[in-house]
Image 1 (cartoon, helix red, strand yellow):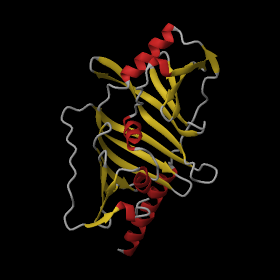
Image 2 (spheres, one colour; image 1 turned 60 degrees about the vertical axis):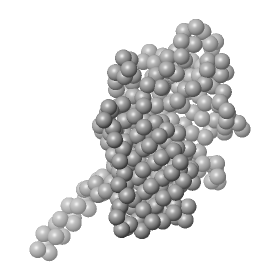
Image 3 (cartoon, one colour; image 1 turned 90 degrees about the vertical axis):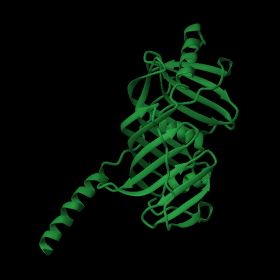
Image 4 (tube, helix red, strand yellow; image 1 turned 180 degrees about the horizontal axis):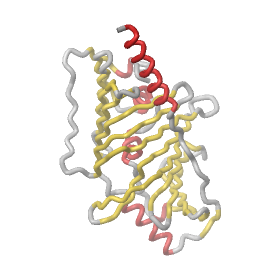
Length: 285
């Protein structure tokens, strides 16, 4: 019996180490640098990506999520259900065997996190401070919802486009926003947004996102390309040197705009309730 147990533990350790070795990190690419005029064709391209960004309303899927911060690295397995900028639910598993460790409900104004390991229910405001405690990433909820959906909200009118650049087979639009600027990296042939860069009013990079491995979906009578991989870098200006937080999302399976999406979160019985504002970091992070 002891020999069998030792053999099992040895095999488990080998499999676990192999799973940990497969850690994914963010890949970035160069942006176009040749400044060009905003022609009629490029204006039409901008309008097309703006319209396409509004078509994705919800999704239901399974994804691997890798998180890297200056302090830690995590590989999580997640079920993701979301309605953009509304409710979102993540059921998170950890380890190669996929033990569920957390059930999370995100609303526009609140968070509910069931820590299954310790039977704790953590509640609090949907605020970047609390999102950082949960996921290791300091982000606004609307951006997080869009990033998980693999889309970019393009709400700014054409007159907000300040500059256009070409190069490397891509086009980038520099768009003036309320808080600064955002750069949209677009493939003019597929008409997919392949990257977005958010810059604050002081010219500092805030967030850089790259989208890869697109699949076509027919939504509202249009063919829309959605990425199977989303790479996110967040530059945390609060840390010395602007410490980077990285997030890689790779979908194994998903349904876009499901007609029967029902986001349900069951409040656990007999769980100890703790306010997220009183917690520095969650156990699985």
